[in-house]
Amino acid sequence: MIDTFYEWYNALPSTLQVYWVIALITSLVFLVQMVLTFIGIGDADTDLDFGGDADFGGDADFSDGDTLDTGGAMQLFTIRNFINFLLGLGWGGVCLYSVIPNTIVLAIVAILVGMLFVYIFLFIYRQLFKLERNGAYHIEDCVGQTVDVYLTIPANRAGMGKVQISFSGSVQELAALTDSDEPIRSGSKVRVLEVIDGTTVLVEKL
Image (cartoon, rainbow, N blue to C red):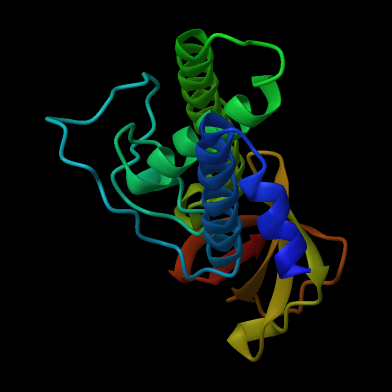
């Protein structure tokens, strides 16, 4: 099988050989990056020092990494985006070689395809970051809200119940305590008085 591959590769024009090498190597690196990113290992991305970072607008702070590695990817000059560029350049050259006979024109078009790949992946990373950011919530925002009791809350902080609270359209379940002399049954309406810790709130029955 390897001999067959070498025969096929050696039969290609030298220009096409270059594009195939770029396409295959960067495809492998790209797949490895994706796997590492989605299992939570690829949380860091090395910036290429080309004099600064690109500002793509928006009010999000991309200085910190996140589980999808969007922090580094949102900067223009990074190793990740360089791989994305070479991925587009390589496959652009391979796919368009038979369509564009002029080597120089083909190279220019392949470069443009590479730049398009970078833009596409930046756009995808931005959308993923927005989804992850929208899924986050600050527990302090629930103070003063009227919420539903999901599991009965024992009286006088004798135990924990649960309440359901809506944050930016997503419903979260939080542990709840009460100072009431009577337990607060499931389905009751309560008001959040304060946040006790990162997962527990103090409530009173309405």
